[in-house]
Length: 190
Image (cartoon, rainbow, N blue to C red; front, side, top):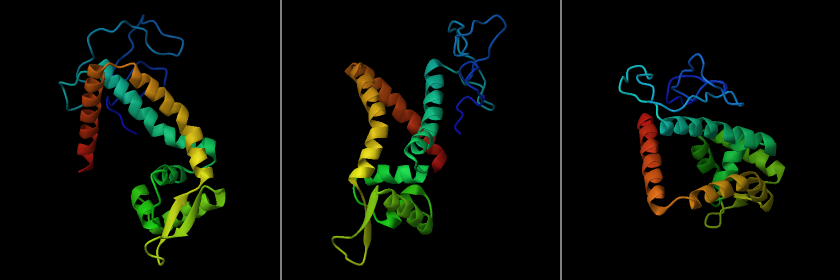
């Protein structure tokens, strides 16, 4: 779980980094309705200059939701998260079992089990590699493609509609912020 603010929430607490004060109004969903004032300061241990802002709170919420989406979508589709991630990768084109293992961060044996289950569901097929008959590639089927699209299209449509509301300048600012946030997170992976 990623926690930008180092404060845990249960959905009924104020946004990350904010503390509820006595007398604060609360919205029907349990969030603080306190007018936004100066951001809270120093809520990240060891980073006294930290200022929790609306953008950082929104980023925290996006990270938390994005961590939950694959498991929820996979469960709705009757798949494991590894199976769903494999289908997502296969949407881009055929892959070898070793490639799937690398993308999922699992062993070849685990990857083989994922592919076996996708084949049983009718969502993928094993085929001989067109350039090397000794090798096998995994290909998504129409059923697998339909499953992914049925589950993910509503989100993509909503994101495209949201993006269309932005001016070119706003889009540049949002992109710069998100790429910077991605770089900050990737710095932990070195």
